Length: 82
Image (cartoon, rainbow, N blue to C red; front, side, top):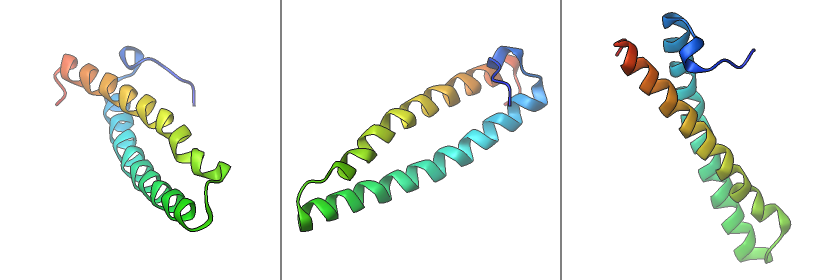
């Protein structure tokens, strides 16, 4: 998929992308919570390991996804589609 800015998308594509982003964020947050739980569990039982850092690294991806969704939502409101 070609990355386009929200302002360049058609109305239908904008709404569809926002819906997909909402689903993606929900799934990603659930997986991230599970990863944090697993990292805490492993750290408590076996001590610190490098895999315990992976949820922290993926939190950066979560921040980027949330920022992109906010941009989509603001473009949808700007166009009066919501």
